[in-house]
Image (cartoon, rainbow, N blue to C red; front, top):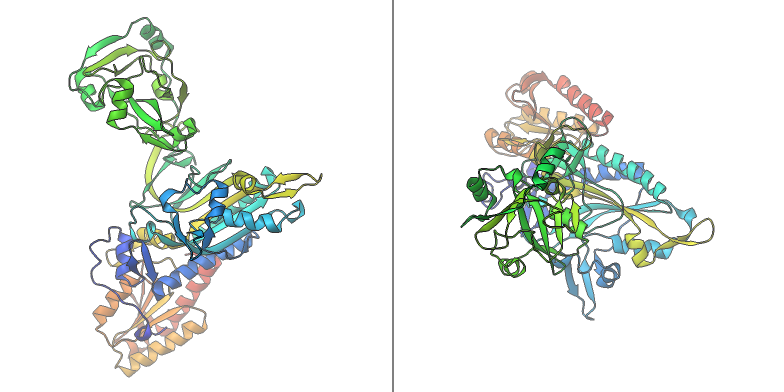
Length: 578
């Protein structure tokens, strides 16, 4: 490609509203442009990267016998009502009516459509297992689009769906998909973790894993062990319990609880100062509304409620922290003085709080707390469960190692759906004995466009982007110092033709522009190899520089071309990755 014909509008400065480094660089380097909040156009270089990522995904999907199709973006909402997800997705589901007043939605995902399709076409176990996938634009009306491609309202996604006659068969596909995802993200040059996760609005009856690209800008927290391969997102992470010694419990049980006058002491921090005790000896009582019904949640003062875990424990569709008015109506006291003693609503206590020999809690009276309260004696919880966030430094449940926290960007998610959709949508097959059985399903998503931002977050410096070779828009960037110099121009074209014949993607900067501008643009765009044809052209020599390195080398033309071709063979031998 000749750069004087390339549509590549670079910017010296990023727009002020671009917060993430990847958003700034993709805008500055001319890969994307914003059309509206959370909606982007992919310019030629951006589209080249997307195509290369998509091709890697296709290769790995085809390798495990998944078959590509394309489903409609417009979906009749009757399908969403039939599956029960019409209200679960809420306002993120973009709805509209056609001229006949029939309601449609722009697809954020395609479980309903694919299940309905397979329901119509697959009737016998002999047609299973079956895995179908597509690469298609998805739509979600995000409340707050941000960070460029990381949280948009329109994005490119690979979604795959598998259909099985048994859980064992699904397990096999799930393992192969897990391996395929690892290969995809390795080939794309990502530093990632596969973590246990919550199924969220997709739902399902089996396991689920997220693939998280590690990056400070990530909106998710990755919890991993420093001694074993345990990893989970914060919503799912579980730590080992610290069990108190039996003597402590016996001593505490012999003491009656006492009432403390605590004027103005509403927070755990204030209670720590007032009592001189550490936060792990105090228990906070939070009032939630679960599907409109109040429930008290008790958790140690140094811990935080994990609302995803709590929602599962309560089997609630909707969960929200109660406001001050509801809290006062339920407890008889203002916020900050709620406690379990004498409460007449369901009580959920976290395992770690339940393990305390005794605790200080609110007294359900303004300016008062109770000390020496013992769970099971002074109040009886309805449920004891793990409903807290794991904390950095907690012990690993698997091996006893220490838990570490990292920020991560979700780039992939795989689910064992079971019969969640097939039962509701009537998708079944006849088994070996002639009986009708609901299909057992899995689904598997990758954020294709999100990978662009995740890669740039991990691969950049003060000068611009540093693309991994497998997904770079071009492999080699040839820069002509003076386009008016016939020797330089001829030599650059010779190198250009030689590398293209060898199968390399080459960009030739033949613009009538100052060399300083060309070199700055080259660093900003981030192509792996740069060859500068300048003052040494008459001697048959050029400057060779890897984008990952600081210094350039002076090489003969034949040596430079040979190195580029060798690097192409190396990249190909590594499955397209660096």
